[in-house]
Amino acid sequence: MGSLLLIFSLLFTLLIAIIAAANHQPVVVNYLFGRAELPLIVLIAGAAAAGALAVGLFSLYRGIRSALETRADRKCREELRARLAGLEQEKGRLQGELARLQQAAEPPEEGESP
Image (cartoon, rainbow, N blue to C red):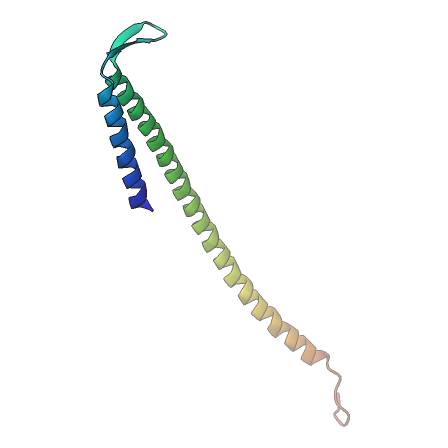
């Protein structure tokens, strides 16, 4: 899946480069604080780079969040395993105590003296 994504990314980058190279005429860009005249190729490449940066940062955020969730899940799983081991030990102890109490509560058989 990763190599397929890489191939599509390279093809998309090549497409943007071809479109940008075909559009080299100057355009006026109005900003809030002024205006600038840039070749359209620079504007297209800048917009593509800004989009790639935004996607990369979003992917980085998701990766970090996923790693933190995995770490928390692993810690929780280990705590649950330790608790299960303790409960299994307690179960064995309680079953032994129950057997001892049941044996003590059994009525003596006929012919035996109490």
